[in-house]
Length: 167
Image 1: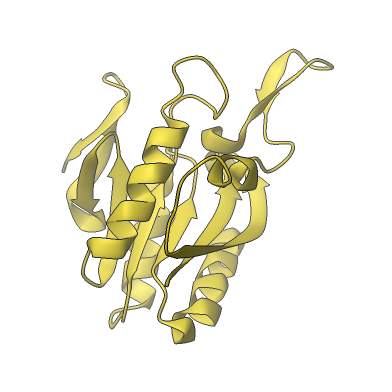
Image 2: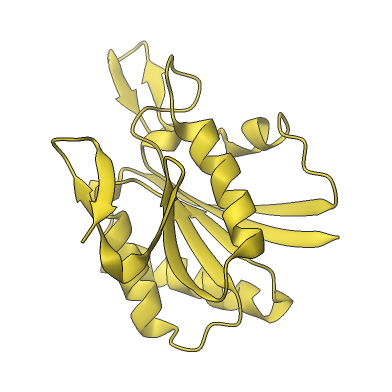
């Protein structure tokens, strides 16, 4: 049985439409519902709902919480997937890479350009690919989006193309 830890921090992947405000907002976690839709034989997924914030609102204290959550799970020797907003995903990944130089497992950051459940959302694809990548990548910190895997220190978000590209 392969164990994988999924740490949820929010971002577009978790956003929902608010009828009260008419905006897309981080209100509630949806990851567990989508994980239940997947066939994951021989895989046990532990989900940790750490926060539900737009990544532009993340600060150093939030990154310290993410680091603490990762450190708490490292003794399990289970790969870690972190759902995160795309705007500051690379910054968080670099923070983790610097703080955790001798990782025993892969850490994979992923998110979405369009929220889970919305038409043409990339969220479920990215979540699924991240779970697979976490199982097969060597230890390190990675970004997985749109069928691509990038070492965290060799990627950047191209806002014009709405995707990640080599740095």
